[in-house]
Image 1 (tube, rainbow over the protein chains, first blue to last red):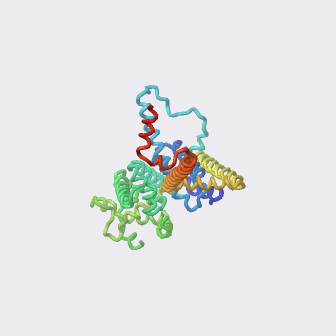
Image 2 (cartoon, rainbow over the protein chains, first blue to last red):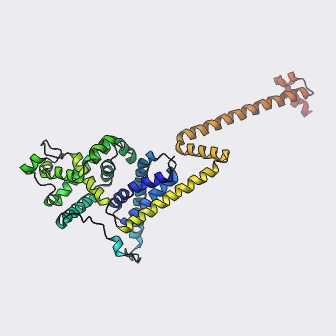
Length: 201
Length: 172
């Protein structure tokens, strides 16, 4: 049985990744925060007494299911909105927020030009990831970002190990093509190797 | 989690990945249209490319703004408090053996649904047959008592013509 401290440590270690993964999937930061909170509560409520080593798998499964619930609700809501609304409310909720709080933290250790390049690269990668089909993104995130093995990924996604490999492979290929299409090679990441670099590497 | 992969891949820092990717002619890879695997020594594999992307995403995930960090911390605190409450309630309940047994059974049923359904169905069937058997024995005892207490001899009830005779007598 896990202790509250173990749960806290586990959640602290995964919360940022979980949030970003959810944000890429639902493309809404506020919804992503709600989904992560829901997943954390479900983990504590239903599986809190399980051993701490089971948490990663359980949490990922709960997170994926909570995302699916969100999409289902969203589908229904969109249907009703389409049917009923011509007076759709605007996105702002009127809540006063400190603008400093929502400014992304940037690493200022590099040169400004390198930093800009890096930020642009990250943006392009994020955009490419958001464009992936849901299952491919799920497989890619679990397999490579969460570093789960094929069997664990298959268990969470509820599909065969072969499907996971196919999804991952397609995701990587799609990402590579999309990044090249968006001109990532211009940022110096995919440029051809020079002879000196070859000897160094 | 694949520990071997962890040691090999987690060890790669983002700079290393970038060097490898800089050494790559990705357009050459894409021209094959089939895979980004290349035979060239300098090429990156699918795995390395995926690692580069995930390293970049990991780096990005560490750059959340204050509001997002605050919300995540609040969510974590709520979850931990929930577990704490649950565990303290469970400790109190453990004083009562029956409650504890009920809790354990509830947990078992919750996690082994098919098995529990089969078990419940089995118990119901056994109970049904036992009740029927008991009922049959009861009836047997009652009929024995009836035969012994009756004015008629037991043979009269076994005689097939007795009922007909009795009915014809009753009509007179």
